[in-house]
Image (cartoon, rainbow, N blue to C red; front, top):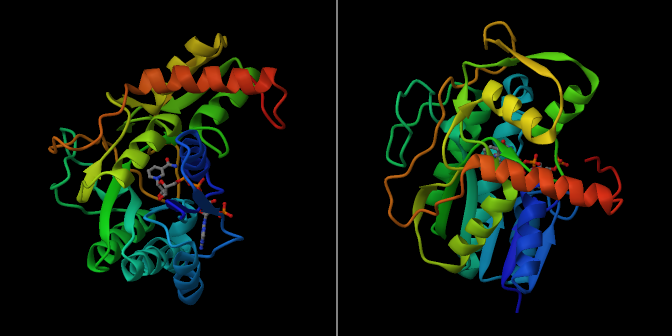
Length: 290
Ligand SMILES: NC(=O)c1ccc[n+]([C@@H]2O[C@H](COP(=O)([O-])OP(=O)(O)OC[C@H]3O[C@@H](n4cnc5c(N)ncnc54)[C@H](OP(=O)(O)O)[C@@H]3O)[C@@H](O)[C@H]2O)c1
């Protein structure tokens, strides 16, 4: 019997979840977007019934935060209705669902870490679509846990760390936003926590992100220090870097729940990720650079 079905398995987090499922020796089915479009309700019902898993981890999402501002319906179709399709299909066969959400469901005006019961108020279309997904999952009747995480980096997807390493190798100086603070999270730390949540019985909303917090500027400084890149990092502001979607100035995730997973510090995640990139580059993995 298949223990686990992973949707959105081709994405950055999806790939880390697949790797962790394999490490744990689970029987799993991994469906990327070509294998299953979560907006296609009948296809989702069929795929979940056919795999008949005990657990579903939904990593499928519309994650283009700026694109969602001009395509709110597209974002809602995947992150709202699509999440509902997966959740109802899981409910229909009695599978337990782990669904991914985001710090962007909050308005970003807090001065202390957000906990699970804090009021939501997403300023962006992406955040609104992810909140709609949380509501779909909660109303689906599936046994579920909704995991809000933040600032992901890892192999197999575009992320801030990769961008900085590329730019830092080309330039002597960069300006990076210093007035947005969050919790950088390595997918290699989050994936085991998600498997643990699938296997366990924690219910409702939990926050799971790299421990500690920093600004994008601080993160860039740390990346260059650890990677040994000689690139000076100046500070700039959100207002100076005009982007279509509003960004929360403060989206640090904490937890009020004793049963929420506690992830290692973001710096440990960064160190581990850089080591993993180096190992992949030495092994000659396609497209990898140290
Ligand atoms: N990245 C972050 O910083 C961050 C922060 C907080 C929360 N999250 C959440 O974490 C989860 C994983 O994100 P990620 O960083 O791994 O994003 P990602 O790399 O963009 O992965 C999302 C995957 O979903 C796929 N997808 C898009 N539309 C789909 C559809 N209609 N049906 C099936 N699959 C579809 C994408 O395929 P295509 O590539 O072909 O579009 C992609 O493979 C998401 O729920 C996201 O909201 C991410």
